[in-house]
Length: 635
Image 1 (cartoon, rainbow, N blue to C red):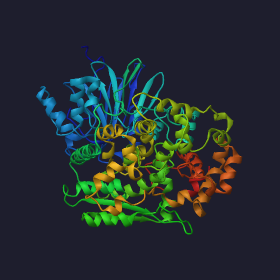
Image 2: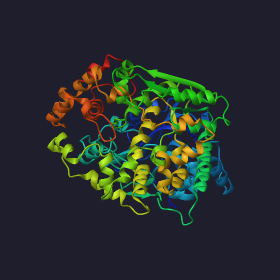
Image 3: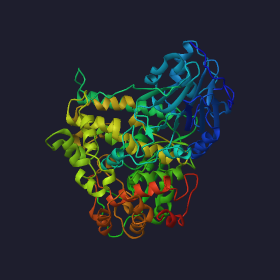
Image 4: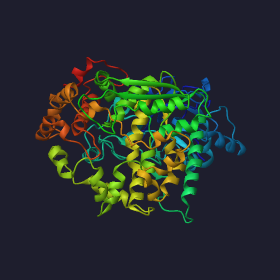
């Protein structure tokens, strides 16, 4: 095998193994020059909040890496990245956690590999040396990483099966850059920031989801989940999908009791993996719903002094939100009391939501309208003062059929895309054309994408198609993206056991009628009996909005009016003014099919563009107070 043709230049640290969680970035040059380290450091600085414990850089000929560390596994100085193995001629930057790293480490030792660390980053390098690109198939966890292979003079990039850890890319004729956030790439300069018309259509039809590889910017792409990419020094790219989800029934039918037993077995195993892969305390985000409550119930006997955290919001006077409570403390308090957790609950007044919105928008890697975004941002700030790692229940509704729209879709007739779209698309294509200025008009590309994804092989029924699409595509941007993005802005890692790939694979093969039994998520309800109170199991499904972002009134309405009537918005010309005026005249009359505010949807996109493209406000390293609102909402 040929040696690397580039001499190692300026390695920042000795060749120790350096496992940790974090923010990563890097550049590979195609033009026989070396990366500008000032640019790498500037991109790395933008990621500082993802990894407040240490910063490191590495350079070797045409490649350079930057890393920001959040120390969770192997807390010693040996755990600082970038990681360089001079014997294997490999260098790594890694964001994430490999939950089965101990088992892999033992296997690699039996093959003759030696280790100088106790963590998971060195396992990735040894695994790549042993199994090549196929190493990712052996990893249980969430990860985005880059390996510079000095012998092959190639860059290997990989992302976990559900895209829990982000990896953004920008490439031109001279170089490829990557980073853990889109704004980090923008800080390096040289990015085409024109809006991508196809991505815009996806964004406004799929509840701000823009499926990989696109982003709303023409010059930035995302490595798709469950994918690897190898990039040569000539710019040639080889991309592979290493995992798909089988949504067909098993050859040997299982009884209901067998399905339930397997669900509990696999969930407990996944929970143990997520809990044990840390050298720091692990807490739980306790919403008071079934999913997070079940996690607490299964952990209670295994963890001494279990920390739990809940958040609630001030309601809107005169608005009855039914099942959508502004807080769920009634149920989270019940769980915390039953299992004697060290519970922390935080009630956020609307005045704080309003004052802190600029920070949340500045921290967004892409525009995200979900109410959970600001909730995760504000809760994570508080939680990060207590722990570095928490478990959360995200993903359970998508994997086990918990949302109200699934039965509605199933009851429909017609082509799959029509059945799906009637209950999920945020607006019809005709309304989209009424909303967006003609410059960005495209055909109904989202309907085409959804039809293609629903029509992929390895599914037995329409709902199997929907749930597979949810788990492999939609969930990546909502909620998975916000579960990484907002907590990591405070140096907090959130782990999601319900997205353990073994558990998702099991659920995907279940008969749909089993999941939908008793109003949805029946397998989780059934295994919760006797573990958590029936009052939590049998309560109506809640959707937990931030009321002020749904029922838009008062100062929140004035904020959105200021954004959408600002000179910057008018100059951009993205929206047709008649449509904007219609929403502003009666904002509470215009909701998406899954009950989001269309006015907030428009305002959030424009606000994000003003912050991240126009530079109207400060970046993610600053934390503006209430006075920043005025400058944020005007050009």
